[in-house]
Amino acid sequence: MTKKILFCGGGTLGPVTPLLAIIEAWRRKDSSVELVFVGTPHGPERELMEKEGIRFHCLPVAKLVRYPSLEWLWLPLRLLTAFYAAWLILKKEKPSLIISAGGYTAVPIIIIGWLKRVPSMIHQQDVRPLLSNKLTAPFASVVTVAWKKLLVDFPKGKLIGNPVRSAFLSANKIAAIKHFGLNEKKPTVLILGGGTGSLWLNKNISEITSELLKRSNVIHLTGKGKIVDVKATDDYRAFELLTDEMPLAFAAADLVVCRAGMATITELAATKKPAIIVPLPNSPQEDNAVVLAGAAVVSKQSETVSTDLLKEINRLLDNESTRVELGENLSKLLRTDVAFEMVEVAEKLM
Image (cartoon, one colour):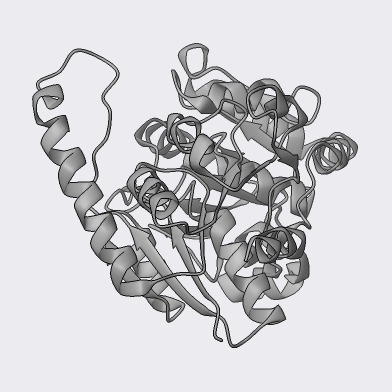
């Protein structure tokens, strides 16, 4: 009998990236497995999954707003709509297993799956537990976590680490520099604003790009619809989003400037890249950044301006030994070669 795995999550790339690593590992282990994905109507996950040849279903998002809002009035109706849509999807697909790494689409899918006796696996990657994972954990067959401290929040959790796609481990720096047409005599700074982009990071980097380009190449991922107007074009490469080419961007980089999303932290750890990290204020990223002490340069957005970024970038570009030390320290904090291990955990549930 063919196994059918239903993955769910989305809205941003955060809950999708680890699932891509699991999907890759599962296909390499068992090419006959059938894969389905349930995501949001407008997130980046649909494009990624369709590119992978994975059947995609949209689920209405019923998000709990944590501050007083008129959205509360519509929440019951949206919840009913989402749960009914989840029931219809599960009735049609009849999966052998559900896997999620968070996101509000997972809540109705996992709860309806539990009612239908479909086993599920939840993965918690951020240091601060996601509300969606806390809501669905009682209905899950197993919870895997990236950090040891998460076992306090999920006592029955299994410490795993966070999976990364194999391409990040095999990408070649020389080939990557040629692929992007960069100056081989300059170091390369990779700027990452996350899957949906960072207006703050884009603005501040645009203010110092001309100075950066005097001594380095710049690869700048701006986010969908957020291309930055930069006059200088030599040795500057801007992209809204990279998927298949992301491992090459990391391979080319000598230094990364980024947010503190777990997908980015995982890719940094896997590739041993030094980083200047500016977590998104008032978000789980701030908790992620706390555990990176000694393994990355962490700056608060409220205390940082563009000239501070430029000064820190230049300091690290001038100190190769510091960059190597930071990359090594980060790689020791987080296991990333765990995709096949997660597949084995999931297979036991079926």
